[in-house]
Amino acid sequence: MKFFIDTANLADIREANELGILDGVTTNPTLMAKENIKGEAAIANHYKTICEIVDGDISAEVLSVEFATIVEEGKKLAAIHPNIVVKVPMIKEGIKAIKWFTDNGIKTNCTLVFSAGQAILAAKAGATYVSPFIGRIDDSGWDGVQLIAQISNIYNIQGFETEILAASIRNGNHIIACAEAGADVCTCPLSSILALLKHPLTDLGLKQFLADAEKMKGTV
Ligand code: E4P
Image (cartoon, rainbow, N blue to C red; front, side):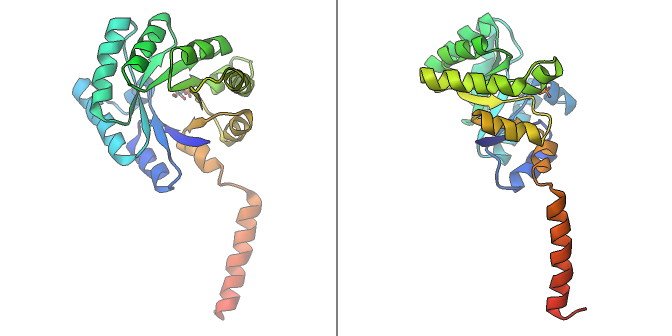
């Protein structure tokens, strides 16, 4: 399973990248606005900087909802760097645009996916990635991980090549459950990636080993 970081914050992206296990980055308008990125030039510059930090697929979301403007915007985003993946919302015009991008060799990430039917449409249009939002599904009283398992089963049976990118991850347990359910990628906030490191027995064991290491060195 690939690990993407789900942020537009450059410090978090650098910290995750330094772990050596990062395969890409996802952003969305909310995450970009949080970093106060405004205007076409600043947006393009920010994506370029992210591409220079991380050697992997970088999702940049379109802000339009009509076919012609999604395509126009997506072409500009894709021209920023070869690793840019154009992120397109799961709407009728978005599906048409994803098909256009597929036919023209531009990678896509179909976002705001909440059902197996939507995931089938994204795959039929040739999306590189489909992004089910598992945290938001859980928040609304349904089971996000179950949707990952269902899409994984359908894609396997049908031979769809679209990669399942589990999004809206809230914690380390989500990452483990998505790995078990067949996600190809998990996009996570830095806190959820770092949560995977943690176990109290690791902390206790290391404390003891460090104390015994001092004995071995003859310092105590
Ligand atoms: C990533 O591609 C999604 O935009 C993101 O994971 C949504 O996460 P949220 O539900 O925490 O906003």
